[in-house]
Image 1 (cartoon, rainbow, N blue to C red):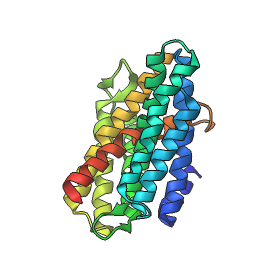
Image 2 (tube, one colour; image 1 turned 180 degrees about the vertical axis):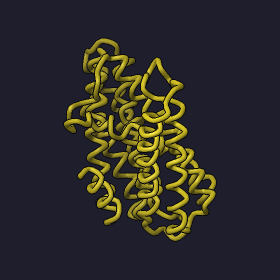
Image 3 (cartoon, one colour; image 1 turned 90 degrees about the vertical axis):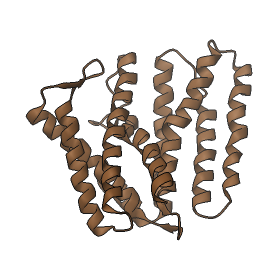
Image 4 (cartoon, rainbow, N blue to C red; image 1 turned 90 degrees about the horizontal axis):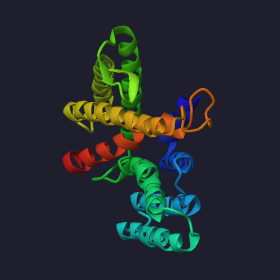
Length: 260
């Protein structure tokens, strides 16, 4: 059901894509702020979500050609307000409170906003759901391949201090699965070259693996198993989208510099 919702939202139109990942972003930010509170800090959850919302909507409107790119700057006063508002809260450790509020926006909402950016082909400015769909297909194939190869052949630990179950064999298996998926996608979607799709598969594998490890590190530091219990049996939003949060900015960077 989860996959069907994601795929349908991506394929239908840019508005359903934007709506889905905005909801994911808000829920993910709230999870992050909840984790930060467990760690003893007091982030500005409401103002953080408002700032993330302004940033997200501005980026989406720019990509839809509704407003010029300068309107992304509308989020700047809200970022400044985070610093000012902390003056009136009288909470301990304002350094960490401000930092965690802003990190929640940068770590969660900004990467999801970038999915809207690379869903458009820059030259003709046309919605290209295949780009985002291909991104997720390779991400899911990486996860599946890593799990299967890790279970069958896993011997050498990848990062035992953070995630004892992850292995180098799983990483390689996930990369091979993603590369295979990238090659198949390149047959049906030829606006990118085969080389670009394969490079994206490798970048997604590496960055998503680090995304998984980073989220595991955060949870392990707080001694919690899941980011929340929002998705029974699957944990929370951050557990489901941890790979996306680092892979999306990397893919965006590659597409902007080397493809568009």
